[in-house]
Amino acid sequence: MNLVFSKRKILWLKTLFWIFFALFFSINGLIGQDIFDEKFEQIDEKLPTPNSYRTGAGAPGPAYWQQRTDYEIEVVLNDEDQSITGNEIITYYNNSPSTLNFLWIQLDQNIRAKDSDKYKINERFYPGYSVDANRLPHLTFDADFDGGFRIISIEDIEGNGLSFHRVKTMMRIDLAEPLKPGSVVKFQIDWKYLIGNRRDDDERSGYEYFPEDDNYLYAIAQFYPRMAVFDDFNGWQNKQFLGQGEFTLNFGNFDVKITAPADHVIAATGSLENESQVLNSIQLERLQSARASFDAPVVIITEEEAVLNEGSRSDQTKTWHYKADNVRDFAWVSSRKFIWDAQAVQLDQKTTMAMSLYPKEGNPLWEQESTKAVVNTLKTYS
Image (cartoon, rainbow, N blue to C red; front, side, top):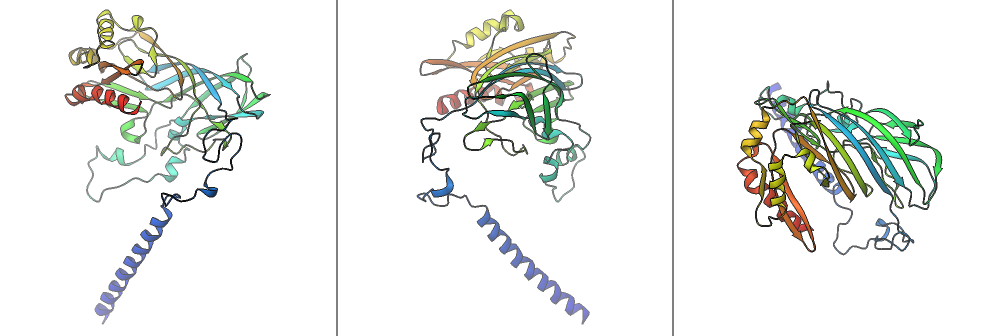
């Protein structure tokens, strides 16, 4: 009798489970639908009320404005403890009709801080089979890693300290005087942080370690405190960064100096301003050839040269100076492992460069396809 009852009970529970399963995904599918369900649906309240800043279609109106931010940044890459130390001068232009009493700064690196909300919301998939010990760190968060910005100081351009309040991945700076419409303010921030291992935390910025030759490859983004956007639609964009998306940024000019071990090769957003100081004569000659090559990439650092460079350990440093005008953001890479090739691309009346930097572990595929893919992307989307 007990055995029959158990079988019936199990059958009833299975039936209940599948009913719940079907209801859950039906409801979840409805919730997950886009708000624009129909191709010709009327927009109605889904766009803001038309005004002088935005038209009824959401396009810029006659009084449309955008804020602007210029950056002067100096950073030092420490290859011994995988850290970055930096300072920046931010020039912020208030093109809005509003008087601003404070500014909001994005601290994207704080997603790696121990108090980050990322660890409260992210889910990790654990396969239903045995996991190799070498793979386990990729399925778990590194609870011992103490990441995030260490803000050393925030001062106005005269060196007077500014009051600030950190809220995880955001930071509010209180201005000594209100920033009126049409005005400009300059201030400076000093900071440092530990670079995370990209293979462990799946972030878009960090290092990859190659134990075979004891080298690091750094792909660095979100490395500096960045001005949050203030616009006519949202006001200040000061939501927390959780890692699954990005916020819009202000356009501006970047003047960036990156100091790293002398045997590292660095590529970054914008144009290299001091190539004769950081490249040798052979590399300079090859780079000039690449600027005139529109049909195929020119190798600037060969695989053989990169392998030799892997074994070097310079106790000197070099500073690479890059500039980029009227862009939203800045990123860079650094390693002594890099193979480097480049090709010129003609876009209407402008010539730009498509480049690839990669370790030998990426070959033979990357030397055959990477820069060609960049060229195709530039031609397709420009």
